[in-house]
Image (tube, rainbow, N blue to C red; front, side):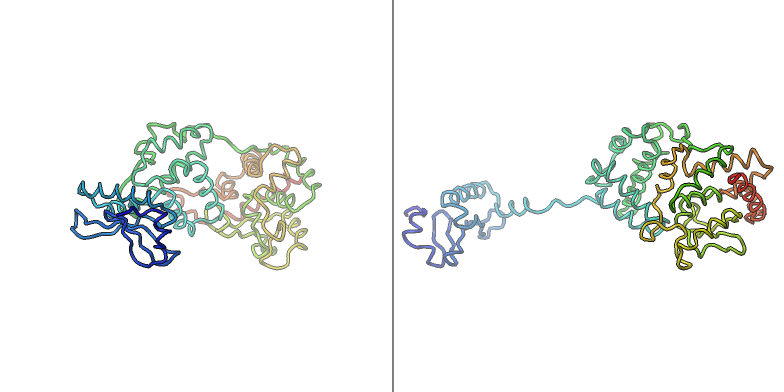
Length: 392
C-alpha cells in the first residue's frame, strides 16, 4: 500500500471524501468535511481487551509523518502491555488536593472573623501582613503539611526588628492553621508559642517596651496656645483629644447624638471603644465650648462632630500630621500618658479614678464584685482640673 502522504491526500482528494482512509498499521485519517479531518489510531487494549481509539491531532496541525510517529509510539506501548489512552487520561487528570492551602484557609478564616471585629482596619491589617510576609512562602502550602521550620523562615527575619508585627503574624498563622485543623479534623501545633516556638525565638514579653512619645504636663499649656492658633478640623479634634484624654478613634468617629450638653456627658458607643464597652466621659467647660464652635459643621444627630473630606471620618494620621507640622515630637496617644502623669503627680486623685478616666480596666478580682460604678462624679472633678491645666 502506498504511504498516505500529503501529496497522495491532495492527489486523491481524500479530504473531499467523508469517512476513514487507512494509513496502515491501525492509523487512519478520519474526514468529516474538507475543513474537519483528524488522525486516529485504533488498537486493542492489552488491559481491557477492547478496541480503543486515540486521537492524534487535527489534520493540518499534525503532518502524516508526525501522525505515523505518534502511532508507532502507541504501538510500542501496546506491545509492552500498556494502554496509551488510559495513560493519557491519568496524565491529564488533576492531582487531587490533599487539603486546604494556607491562602484558602486564611481567606475563609478572615471571613469567619469579620463579624467579631469592631473596625474594618482589622481585616485590612490581616490581609496586608499575610500577603506581605506569609503568602510568598506559605500561600500555596497545604495547611496540614506546614512545618515549624517553614514558620521560622517567615518569622525569624522580622522577629527582632519588627517584634510586635512579627508576634501578631505568628498569632494569625496559628489562627489560620487552627481554622483548617478544625474544619478538616487534624492537629497542627507548628505555630503555637507554648508548644515549641518559645524554645526557638526570644520571648516577646521580655522585650523593652516602646512607649508612645509624651509631652511633660508642664508644657501642655504653651502647646495649647499654639494648637489654638492652628486651623483645620484635625486641629480641633486634637484639642478634644487633649481635653478629654480620649483615644483618637472615638473622637474621629464621634457624632452629635453622643453628646448630652445639658448633662455634660459624651457617651461613646462600645463599637468605638478599645474594650468594646460603652463609656461615659464627663465634659469640662473647655470641651463644651469647643463643641459649640464645631456645631455649624453638623447637620443632624448622626453627623460627625469632626468631619473630614466629603463628610467622612478624619484619617487615622490626620491629628498626628498636625503635631508633625507644629514640630512636636509627642504622639496623639501620648497625651493620655501626659494626663496620667499629671493626675498621679499633681493631684490627689485616687489611682482608680485616673484609670477610669482613661477607660482602663481598673476593677479586677474581688473588688469588681463591689465597685460597679464608673466613678463619673469623681472623674468630672478630675477632668475639670485637667482643663485648667491644659488651658492655663
